[in-house]
Image (cartoon, rainbow, N blue to C red; front, side, top):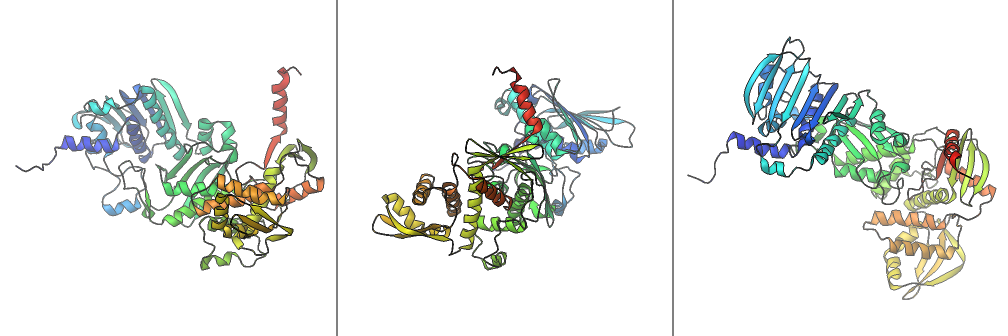
Length: 575
């Protein structure tokens, strides 16, 4: 007898179950997605002991006939595809026909279902994948599935489950994700008899976000609705005040299916660059709609991994979707929007280093085309109230107060100017110094200058090596400096060496932001009133006036109701 044998059906099912079902949360996910595929718009989930002893899902979907119920617990039995070509036109959550068979092989299951037009329901009882009984009974239209004693026949796998509270947390996370991708479906989740989650099925994503994250986060969200050919991206992103310390709240769906994809994560990071603080991650909940022929989720049984046929197209679409939503917001009360596609294309090409490519030269029809600016300045009527702490400019616009951080605002203005000149490689971007200065550098500083000489030159520095460890400064970037010009070069050099980056693009971005930061007016510096108005005018001309390049907000708004609330909170304070 040879060494290779055919495994029996029960062993095959349990191996397959290990691919699909690792813990109770996977059972809830698969059954919940089946309910949605059955067009249910009301679903109730009940779990006990973290799903180990009971998982029960009741839906009002299409229901199943007795014949379909019997086939549903067989491997690779599905109503969703007929042949391999159907995979390119499949939009259901499931299609492999593995989930229910895998669940049935490691638990005790009962299925109760009544399809539309059938007077009676049918009940099926399955143990370890084997049908042991069935009967006619009465039930509402839809399907009820009870899964009991999960992993009872695979004790090794059961032993690796966490405690009940942890397993329920995994379940709740999946329910929340599915609710976020299906806001038109009402979902209730009960844990040991107590309601733990509810979505009303209103179709409004913000209703679910409000319940999960609260009022404060919901009010700081920006809607996304971007279309690029056959691809549409919808959902919400958070402004800079909602940035997170981790990627936990970066959620992506593909045709309502939750996915994880490094390409999308990287594109989102680039789109949020400069809009979140250093070390922070942008908040987003996005659903990508596209033809099934443009991607493949048939990579792993969990269907969380995905391959795209045109990765460059997806990367660019996500970048544009987030960037457009972020830039089309009101600023200082002005809500007028303009087509920013040219500006976003400019930013995209800078990130991807496309400026030397012939097919992108059309972006720069002339050296006078300053893409950082809007077509026209935002129009606002404000009352200048003054500056407090020599740092925050206060404006009144209607019944609102706006605080402008003078350093963050000036830093953004300078950053946009320097980056635009850098991208266009303008030779006239240098202001020659009346007296040249020679500065002595350390060995490490000297090596950085030599290695990045072109970086300094493109940003507007006119410097030359002057001996073994000295450089001569002939000119500096032609921008408004608010500090000692000699110190700017040294401060930028120190910052760059202290915070070295791995990629050349990170070095460029950091360098430009550092020059802007070191040259900008600082907190505590006194601005004359005409300088304040000039700074505000320059902000109003920017496509992106919302934050400094490090993610610090340039403005903060207080409504009259916010001020009133502060006084209410202060009424118990003894002054």
